[in-house]
Image (tube, rainbow, N blue to C red; front, side, top):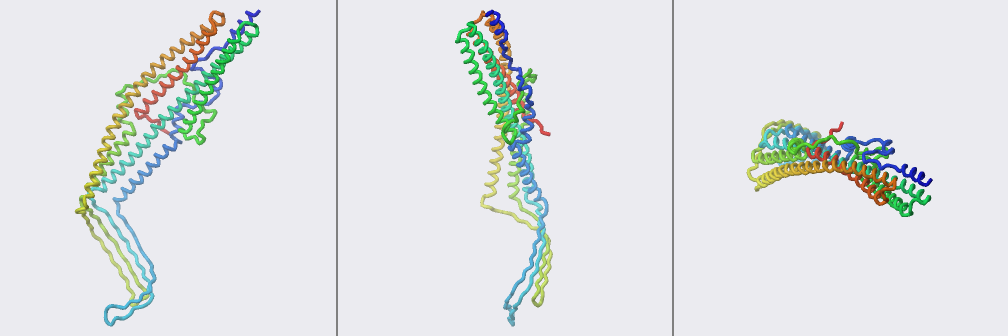
Amino acid sequence: MKKILLTALLLSLPAFGGAAETDSGAARDSVLTIEEAKRTALENNPGVRQTLARITAAKGVLGQAYASWFPTVSASGGYIKRHINIITDYPPFPRVEGDLTETNGSLQLNWLLFNGFSRRAQTLAARYGVEEARQTHENARRLLVESVATAYYQAQLARENVRIAEQNAAFNRSLEKNAKIRREVGAAPRSELLNFSIRAVQAESDSIEAARNYTVASTVLAELMGLPDTRLPAELVPPPAAGEIADSIPSYETLVAAALEKRPDLKAVESALAAAEQRKIAVKGSYLPTIGLTAGMNFSEQTGIDPEQIDRDRYAGLTASWELFGGGRRKAEFQQKKAEEFSLMEERRRKILSIRSAIRQAVENAGAAEQQWRRQEDAYRMTQKVRRDIELLYRTGAANLTRLNEAQTDLVRAAGLAASSKIQFLLALDKLRTESGEVPETP
């Protein structure tokens, strides 16, 4: 009778699920894909909105530069009441005293015609400034999606570790229950019962730690997504990293060519370099004369005195100014702009080297991550088979408790390594995309 009861209990032991399986709770959750997380972050993140405001500011600078191509028209006027007491300086030196009203107005036009091509260079520099702001915005988006991917995959891994730990705890709790029944019928020692109890508590502790890691990662993800409470909705979670990975690793040359063409941080440096060159040209223009057109009319009327006075005049003409010597100011300013241009040339060179280095590292990292993932998947499948075999042997009494513990520990470790290596490979593939300058579009 004891053997029949023991066999029935052992046959009811649960099997430890694979890393790719999903629990019933996860099946009821809404899925937050990485594409949705990136899109939400690009729409809501305040850092991206801040760079959009800088584009608007750069456009304002460009508008000011364009304004210098048009004439400036100004008007002025006044209506003044005065009391005068004047002794004239001509014979017979009469005294003029009384109240008078003075009305005056003027209209003036000034138009800069030539200033040594400085105006054109300043306008081009402002235009390049707008492009630099745009590319800075694109680079902020690129870095944001990279951060989102890191937080997303960390949350996904933590959630997978929670599931693995919970299944491990459930497995040991079931064995604990069975061991308790076997102990009651005299078929198992107390040490065997305590063994499963201890391992169940340890698995539950691992589950708590993994849940904490998920909370931290999901909080960072929610912050990047711009969610006001910096918390993912309870019903919106990253799905398990299930299925095969079909993406392949592009060659280093392909990625470098794409990055040199599309990387917004490189384009921003190139725009800044072009703007610096135009600012240098603008300083050179200050060595030439400035020529402008001026025209206007004035009106003045005084009443309350005898005789009343009305003055009107109009004028138009060309004006010119030429700074012949300024104490070396222009030369020093030119040297400053030239040094700034050289600095940006070196910055561009440094940026290209940095891009090449980052892509080479990313390619090597992705290749190693792929190999580790495939090997860990193979190791996990083999460990599953070993654990099943040991479990069957334990059920029949051919394997002892220590061997079952070892097999279960190996399975939990293999499941964690398989999940971790897969996440690392997915993250490495995403890193390749961002390093090559690929940024998802927002609707």
